[in-house]
Length: 310
Image (cartoon, rainbow, N blue to C red; front, side):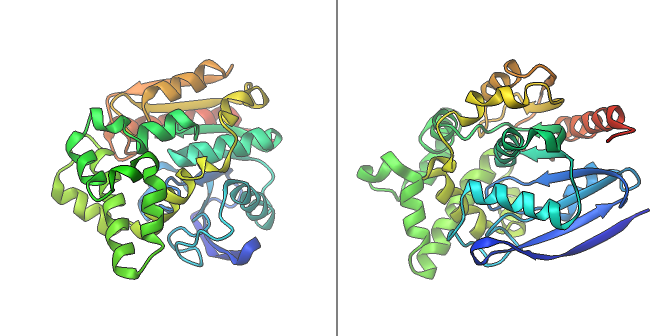
């Protein structure tokens, strides 16, 4: 039953998306939406799914990881990512999906669902990021300093005081400059994020993870999106949540997540009629035991309720 298709699909603006289809060709369609923006998906992401039951569509978003051109911020904004999802699903002949998403992937999943609720059978969300000013300011404009002052100081130490009102914009400008400067600031951006995304992470583990990540695309795309308010209207998700209030949603949220604090998951949960919120002993990473375990079990429950599905 295990089947794997992969390749590239051309989309607008000169971009090509790398994708893989994993599992049972006739299984429950699941669309995996990675975080970042810019992180891409990894082989280990397949561990959440049963290839006998699920048909999982993975893809690297515009500019991310294996998609081309690498790290490109040209013609790269949220509405275009939404168009890409629609196009990819059409190419693959998929009409309805379960959305499985984490962090920035949650933002994208929620925006897509609001625009096309009739295409969504359910959602599994981890580490909710709403893409609004409060969420952005917490992550990139000082909220994290309360919990990780040493990592925050490393992150901002090369930024002149006059530029600290828009840290993402400053980093973006540096990453658009010559190669050595771009590389240094991309590494610093990634180091900041990885250092705070998992409980008890060591300096050596941070370095090892960064080496495995396409950190250059992660850094420049995150800075690009965060300096542009994620290219969505302020509070777009919460203001339009009524369009998806009756879609089944499971939310797995780390109690100690300092990248996407629990308040945002709670606010989302409060506005949905069919949501289940699990706040667990973990931070942000989907590799933490309580998050990993509950992602798998919640997906099993959701899929079980969809069989047989239309």
